[in-house]
Length: 216
Image (tube, rainbow, N blue to C red):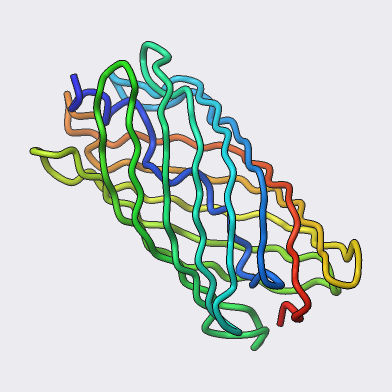
């Protein structure tokens, strides 16, 4: 049963949720998304709703750490999935002519009724650029191998992008609204046929960044 669940849910990382910028100091946000049912010949993904919260803390001019948690209704019987993620983000280029950032971390998710826990690692990159002082379009990808304990890795590839808006709300507060579209391909994730599973979705992120330092 645990193995079959891998063919029914996307990887632990839902959405990029990162536009390539650094928080002022601390950033808090809520995210939500929908992933319409899709692909797999015999094990299709059902419609999935995702909700979560995340916090980011800046550790230096070009490094931040992020902790995220959430839930999704993403199994065949509607058993909710709990997701936890710890990620480190680093900026390699600052507007030269684009911002290039990398990200990587560890994640885990489990299903209550199935009493299953799965683990993964993820890594990727995001390219973005300021349009004016507040708007930033971005594109990125994430590679996310998920491990079912006692079984093999199931690699997922995520790709997509979006646009973020960070208006100044005060001398040390910036708002955050980001809308993105992301796609997934799970290689061999349909465990009955060793076939790929493909899905896509859209996510909305709303929050704020606090601190006295400048973003860049």
